[in-house]
Length: 189
Length: 74
Length: 84
Ligand SMILES: [Fe+2]
Image (cartoon, rainbow over all chains, first blue to last red; front, side):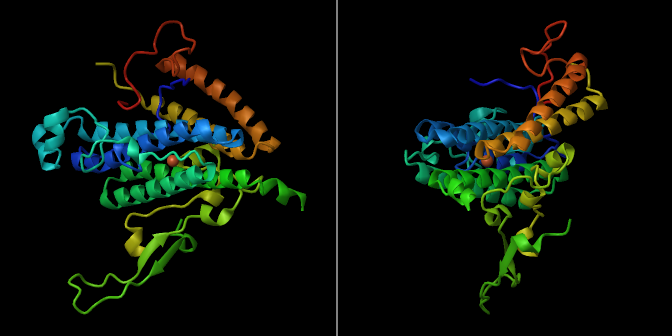
């Protein structure tokens, strides 16, 4: 089960009403390397990974939901008071006719989220390498969104999220070492 | 903190005389600190909780600042 | 519309976020370093500190968790985290 805390993991501020940026950010909401994919990927892999690393998948998967909420908060703030005309100018007309002002799990190009983004091989090493790759891809996506954005406040929160991908990648790499059972042996020397 | 050269690498792609865009020079890519850490050693120095939140990690050894357009500027 | 939140809300919240973040970092670290007693001790100390910070914040601004202790039901009242 999960318990909700009524706060964001990191403060989200945006400096202007900018639906165009919201359109880019949707990539990390419902895109292939986005936060939803990350959360679902890790939590689903928990069931077929050795007990020693279940906790890590569980806890990183849980943190990804906190990141998903931050991305949603950014999109919400960037679009909430925008007029339909502003949304149209930002390239969000197609989104608007289908979803109005609602958020939707799709990527930046409006392709709906699909379970095929999330691999599960049932082989612990294959799955952890997939997770490491996913973290690096998410890190890269944050870099490219920061490159596209002139919003100083938003970029501050995006930098936080990029750094989290580095820490997650580090932990998944350690999980691989744990499964190789090299770590305990090294301690003996 | 200045851009961390250690965790940014660069290369210069071949520029053809017929390439329409001006040669931007070096292209940069990230090789963040976790790629070099191996299994994290115990008792590494830590940021204070406030600073850790601001940086996105508790450990300076894992911190990798990213500048807008780092790809171009390194 | 609920009243605009005072500056104090943000500063008090950020203190909780900072402690909570250190807890998250230690939690992930301990998942791969279960033998590190110092890190575990630090985690438990931070959890105590979080409890201390939560009390005055929740009294002023309402519960952060639905099972938070308050003198009346504040949990489901706006603003929500993405609105503040
Ligand atoms: Fe992640």
